[in-house]
Length: 263
Ligand code: PEP
Image (cartoon, rainbow, N blue to C red; front, top):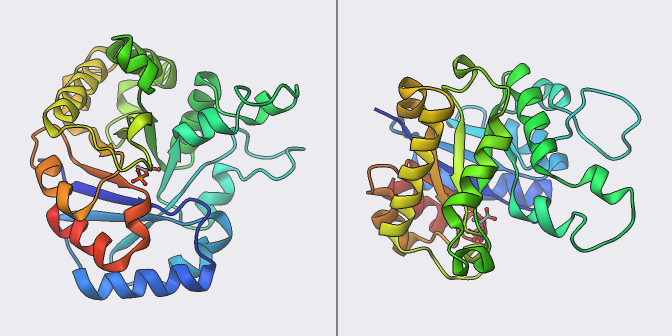
């Protein structure tokens, strides 16, 4: 069966020292768990210190984003090759904050779309990450307007098809996909567990169509969007929800430990 996975996305919070203190604190509370993969995604600068702090605690390191070229004149960007050198095991791609808010939707400058995430750059990032042995955590999800228009499934299928185009089934066994309804991120509004399960089951069916049944069985599908200690248990008990991508609640040691214990 699939091992549950709980990933904390710290976003642009915590200094390296604060991040190290946080992981030490929750690692003590959960001890080493072999039945749950625990991942923390600090900002790039904090990765080395946090990684060294958790080295023997069974906690894995993820990055929050990556650029889609290995090297070159791309000021301010970080490549998958550089992340691999730092023992980064996972990397978030297609998060709604990097797809939308930092992208062309809010600013007209012509250079911005080049650095923002589109379906095309998400695809390129996944290709580079897999090449360097880093597991992508591919985020997909609809906005409130899309949900209200009844296009949720169509939007998610489109994001999955674009992100995974060109990948061979053999590359996708370890893939992690996070269903993150945009309207639930950081809002305190959680998707009802039955609906989250329905979408995660739908995601698995799309993966089956794009790859094959074996891949669909292996791929881990997380739910993300205002996961807290008090709703994690119900969400994680659903057959197609293999854990969570946790933002705000991962910044609190006791809360994050409780979420991990729910898995
Ligand atoms: C996220 O940013 O991926 C997220 C799920 O955030 P939050 O848990 O704060 O809604």
